[in-house]
Length: 166
Image (spheres, rainbow, N blue to C red):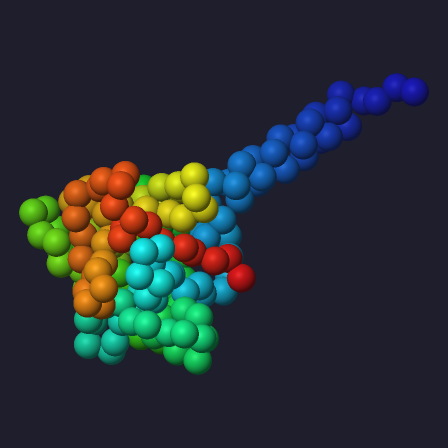
């Protein structure tokens, strides 16, 4: 059976497109999700939380992050330089404090703002470390419910986050 050049090109093109979509989906599973997810700190089991005033902190939630609390659910929006995390209740985006600052807050989303871009680094234990694109510091927290950024350390389990893709 002979296959015309046109058909061969179409089949190859379709296979190439499917392979590209698979690579994109594999690299950014959070961005591929249409639903918001709760972020659970690996060390504290607290949830990343925010309020209408733009404060960002962690909070205990024995029901699971985001269950019965939309302030603990975050949408992941993919960008060429990382992901933007948008709170499902407030619509504000997780924002680093900038160079030399450890502050974390939620502000109006701006895809051009490097303080709102986070690089998601996957860890062997299934968690992710979120590194701010501008200040290169990782999202961190403590048992007091504070959220901030600090210099990445492989041994710091407080900066590792479980991000379920439900």
